[in-house]
Amino acid sequence: MTVERFGRIQQLYAPLYLSNVCSNVCTYCGFSALNRIPRKILTESEMAMEYQALKEMGIDHVLLVTGEANRRVGVEYLIGALQLARRYFSSISIEVQPLDQDAYEALIPYGLSSVLVYQETYHREAYRDYHLSGMKQNFDYRLETPDRLGRAGVKKIGLGALYGLEDWRTDTFFVALHLNYLEKQYWKTRYSISFPRIRPHAGDLRPRSVMTDRDLVQVICAYRLYNQELELSLSTRESEMFRDHAFKLGITIMSAGSKTNPGGYRVEPQSLEQFEISDERSPARIAEMLRREGYEPVWKDWDATYDGFPAKASLIEA
Image (cartoon, rainbow, N blue to C red):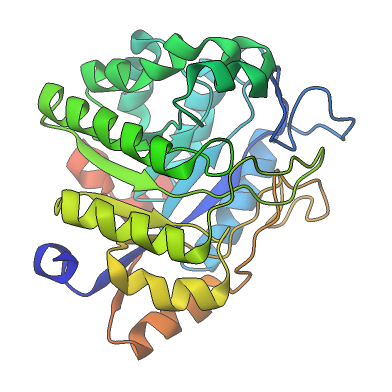
């Protein structure tokens, strides 16, 4: 079903962490405000160094990630990051704190094409147990974020649950229910699903519900059977062996060469990670594996010219 709809391709991207400053206290995250870790917000010159490092790896689709800190890493900071990123990348996604609709509308002209926002768990009572303070405590505001994205006209919305917080079957069902509603309400928007499992991190939390490799394969296949148009993403949280075998079962997007710490590619490689990755191969090695298996690596999701932007070379010269 996946080959029929998407062909034998895998889209590759890399996350780039702009900041680990966060005002929330979340028990499962290394960036939690209570964790005594060095905090870092990339400057414009440091962003440029990180962007260039990714370009040298062949990456043309970047996911910009921050902790949730509206005052220090707010809309103006994100606009600057997007403006600079457009000089290097064809496709730009973000995974930051939930914003109001007008904030998303303000970011779109600067090259924003997709937003990832995970509810973490759809279990309202358990959600309170994991989110002890900060804006992220507001379950409903986070749950309504995809609606604000749809109304703002963002091209693609990424959904998901953090597997390990609650029963994986229940959260999988509610992600699908949420997706079903959004597709009917905002039918011009594309959607993707991710499958993050809790990984080791500072302030380590033992998963309440264990999701095995077998369970994850079942969920991936279930989503593909449920929706042939859906984009399914598999991150470097998963092992090299698992990804090499599971990507053929419905996956269309894979991260590659990931670093989960601000400045991790060039500026400050030893800064604290949000979580430990498992597949540490370079984008080139993952692309080589895909070609060996008869698949084509695709390096971008969207082209700048579709948004009315000039080619990247002209921007760099400017």
